Length: 312
Image (cartoon, rainbow, N blue to C red; front, side):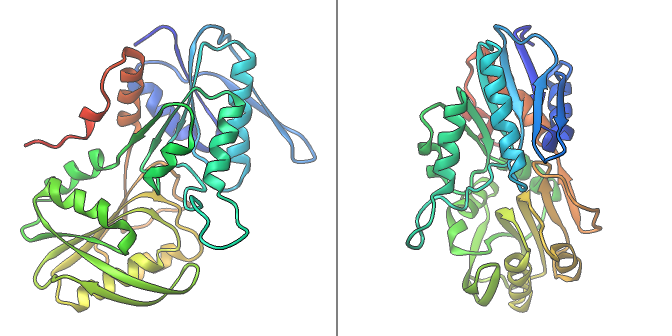
C-alpha cells in the first residue's frame, strides 16, 4: 500500500468505495457534501490531499447529480494540488449514447469524456463499457476492466454439464464469444427487433439449445424486457435451464417483477450500481477486490491485462 494513495467516494458509490478501500488496505478518505435549499450541493475534501494520488470512486447512473458530483470532486482535487487524479467509474453512464443513431442527437459519452478531462482527470478506471470505442473518446489513459474476471470463476464453480453461452441480442456477440472461449462452450445468439425503445417486438434464436444449460451474458440490464424474453425463447427451444450474468443492474421500471416471473433460475450481477430492493433470483458479486487490485497495479506500474487471462 502506497502512503501517497488516498481513496475517496461520491455519495452514489460510497458503499462500494468503502469495500475497495478496505481491500486496498486503507481507510476511505473523508468527503463532506453540503446540500443547499435550491438543490445545489458542494462536496469538499476534509483532509489534506496535496501531492497525493487521489482515486475518486463514483458511478454515473441517474440522476445526473451523480455525474456532477464526480466532476466537482475532480475539480476540487485539482485545485487542492493533488499529484494525480484518477476517476474510478464502476458504471460509466450515458455509454449507450456512443454514436449518432439518428439526426440531431448528442454523442453524450464523448461529451462526458470531454467534461471529465476539462475538470482535471488524469486517468479513468471503468468496468465493462457498453462500447469499447468509448476509450478512444478520452485523451487520458483509460483502464477498461472486464467483469469476466468475476463471472468466469463463478460459472466454473457451477460446473454446468451442458453449458452454452447466449447473447440476448446481436450487439453482444463479441462478448458472449469471449465467454464461450474462456469456458470452452458453444454459444447462441438471440435476434431481436424493437418496435420502440425498451420494448422488444420480435425475437428469434440463432443456434441450438436443446438439452443445454444456457447462460445469457450482457453488460447492462435496464427494464429486463430483452433478457426475460430471451430466457423464454431459449426455454421454448428445449433448454434444460437458463441463467443470466449482467454487469450493471440498472433495473428500472418493473424489471424486478419481470425477473421474478421469468424463466431465469438466477440473475447474477455486480455491485457497480446498488440494487433498489432484494430479489430471490438476483445474486450480487462484488467488484471491490478487482478495483483494489487495479489501484495497486496502477500505483506500482504493473500490467493490468494479466487479470483477465483464464488459463487453466
